[in-house]
Image (cartoon, rainbow, N blue to C red; front, top):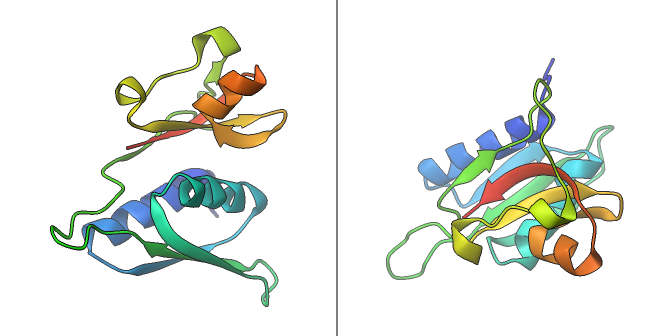
Length: 132
């Protein structure tokens, strides 16, 4: 049994990048699907597909690499809020990752979004992870 599905998601993506895999397959749930959509919208992954044929379903993510240098688009994935220590941020205290070069993914009352979108919508929430 997995106690932290978001950490498992991030670890699977991190391990696939270190092994230079093109595609990673992850068990799906709602929050993982929303995080995947945010990563795709911000250009960190090449594409994704949700396969709901099984009971739980899966997410297939095509990872993005630079065509010449073969460096991954995702340099670091860092879990911030854990089940043992939840981390919340008010709209005035939203984190900036690498002075705005990276993104922080938040779970807010208006859905899963980046810290920049949360600032424009004037909402705070739980800081799930940093991506850069």
